Length: 208
Ligand SMILES: Cc1cc2nc3c(=O)[nH]c(=O)nc-3n(C[C@H](O)[C@H](O)[C@H](O)COP(=O)(O)O)c2cc1C
Image (tube, rainbow, N blue to C red; front, side, top):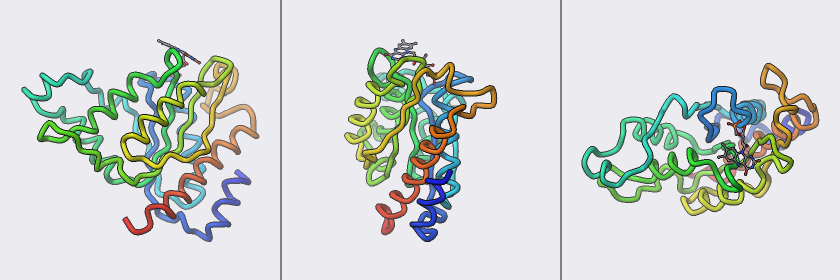
């Protein structure tokens, strides 16, 4: 929290009102990555941002299929999620690591959101937006390997991805029953990343 406050002070309220969306690329109700995003959003909010959390479980999407897109168009949840993405300038995203790479939910969601009603690419929901990445995993590397592919995908889509990121290893032992991190230092660092994202978003998207 100290670092989050520092970022707020240094910015002189620069991040006030900047719109930040947080999501985790896990549908699991008790997802570690969802917990992590909520903590980071708190840091962004402390820095003055206007924050929103979206649970992708509330917006299920089929596996992308070009034939169903051609026949039926975009699922309604694509339009809803895309509106939400368009309405925000900064993103706090956490992805589980599956076999060393990003989660299929991350890839499928962003693939759908990259499509337009004319069944062609539309990256307008992503381009020029700012993102900070996180991961939590029961493993010893905390999902660090998977973030390489998340970073690559999001950069391809036009996001400016912050160099700093946060991973939480041994996740079964890292969170309490309320979804808070047991380690105060980790909590501070996750909140500080949220604050950093808010400030970077305010600075990098000032004229958009
Ligand atoms: C198919 C599959 C592959 C996985 N591969 C990895 C892996 O490579 N590294 C890792 O740290 N955890 C791996 N895990 C474990 C996930 O990190 C773990 O299920 C985690 O809780 C998922 O994130 P969530 O809690 O946000 O749902 C894997 C899990 C599944 C189901």
